[in-house]
Each structure stands twice: as C-alpha cells, then as structure tokens.
Image (cartoon, rainbow, N blue to C red; front, side, top):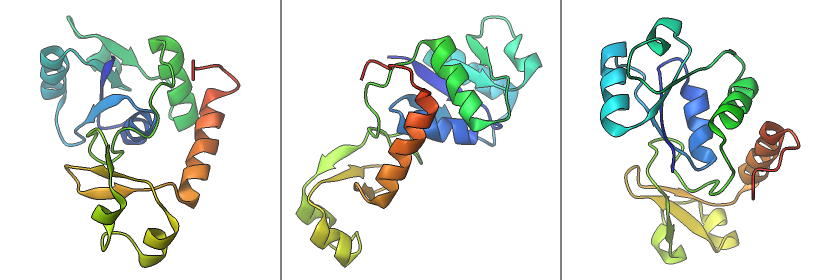
Length: 155
C-alpha cells in the first residue's frame, strides 16, 4: 500500500487522503530537510507545492499543481493511481488506523442521543476519539463522490 507524506501547505489534502483510507503523514511545522529525511527513511511519496523541494535528488515526489482541494485530490488520484479501497479507515486527525469498538465502550464518550441512536462505532486508539455514521457521514460521502468525478475507483 502506498505511503504518503504531505508538506505543510497541504493539510487539507492530507486530511482527505486519510479519510479516503491512505496512510498520509503530515507534520506542518517541520522544514524541508526533515520532510526529505522522513520521506526517504519511511519510503513515502512526498506531496508538495514547493517546486524546489520536488526537484531534490533521491526523493519520490508529486508536485501538487493547484491551490484548490478538489483539484489536488484529483491529481493525487490520477498520478498515483489511487483506488478507493478503505475509506473511513484512518483517523483524519492523526493518521492512525481506526478500529471497531463495542457500543458499550463509547458510553459517556459520545452524546447521549448518539449513543441511543447508533449501534456501530469506530475508535482512534491514539486520539481516543470515537467516530460514527452521523449526518456528517453523508456529507463526506458526497464530497468523495465529487472527488471521484464519475471515475470508478475499484470500489
């Protein structure tokens, strides 16, 4: 599976690639040398808007051309040959794989109404944040469909 690293200018792209299920590291406060070191040592593809950084020797980079999120996602999908295999499987905040969690384990961690009306939850073991299919789920699915632009991602 592809491993990605987004530079400090691509926080929204990193979040959406995580939502799509891709291992996408993002450290907004580190410099170019450290980004290059991490990309090389972890075998990650560096996503950057920085033309000079993208030219560095020995880096596997994708120079992101647009400032617009939708275009950035389209470019990453097209040029990296991404497929939609495991959406909603990673924490959009910290990139940790989510795990299924028993309903009783989220009691007191989610609003009472959510606990009463939902049966299935996921949980980020690092952030300790629970996730569920609320109204935001449908909005996120609509956004993903917009990103897909009618393309088949091998769902």
